[in-house]
Image (tube, rainbow over all chains, first blue to last red; front, side, top):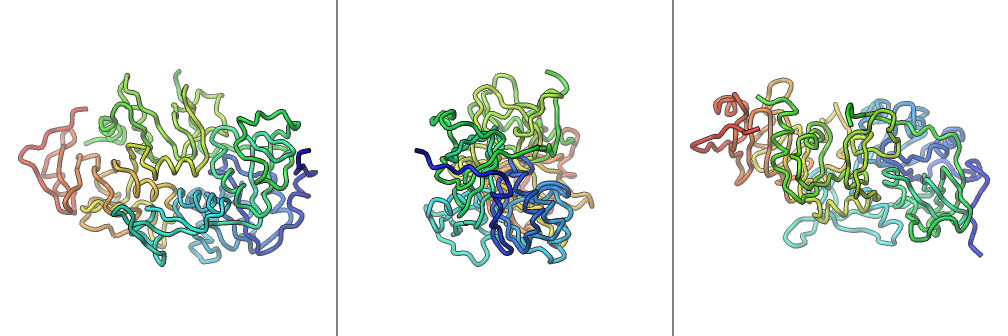
Length: 234
Length: 217
């Protein structure tokens, strides 16, 4: 019999989050973000948290909602350009920010979930990102030692999932979700559609359920578009 | 002198048949509009798509289908989606053959700065540091001077670096420049632009060939 990860909803998913914890949140911009869990973290008012997320949402949506209520003490991200409140808090020193190259962020999460404590990458060599980090040459090229990332909770968003925690993502909403699912001590998956066991094709699952501890079907997805761009002709 | 679309049109000539290409945000995104018919090229966007197509017809936008600039896009037949770690494996592993990105400053030894103005603007590097550290073929698309009229082609970058010694070619509104042996080498000038104008707008060491052809666009 399969191990069930199914829970009642977002309240149960987030019931034991605490101040000062480290969270990972999937998504690229507003694409593939765990909307329900973010709302719940805002409602709970959990504070002094560290958020690991590629971006920081926009001023009134996504992680921007946590920022607005000053719930975040530290952000670990690669690009935060769409959020004025973020920039204000960072430049004023209220918010601690660790900006790291996007590929290093993805690989640090993957490494955290895969039991690899650190790895060398060429990204950031010769820049302030490499300051204080070990540099070593491989094949005549300098590389920077980057360490793995893990989190108390990883909040990820998928298109479809089953009670075993198996997940399938849609299009580019996959982004950071699979690596963060691997790196959470407790990984919460919110899905648009929770399907019966056996209805997902095992050949097509992106995240195996072993990485997921809690799963529920989310509600009322807004799925906002940041830059709506269209073609005029066919 | 070229406008942004002109720069993109010139850079499109750098794209070769059979290449996987990553286009950055801004002018580089426009390059896709100028690829000649019949060229087999696939565009990679680092948020997780290979085989990126044009913007969608109005009414068919999908919030789950965007590029790294967070713009709605389409997927062409043969396209594939993947996670961010796989995406940067393609980039770091040099499976992507051409990278086009914008810059605030480029130096004569190939350094690039495009992610931070201390105390003023801190947007972050996104995927730029991974891209410039690994790509074999990096073309920078930018205006030759900033809004204050100062050269963006310098002897050394003044802003925090994105990568060191990595840029091979720069295409601006005035010229095509190659970077080698610690100097800019003028390759082509934009239509209607004189060599003198390029010399005046370039701060870093500049090598001039005997003959500077005008770009053919």
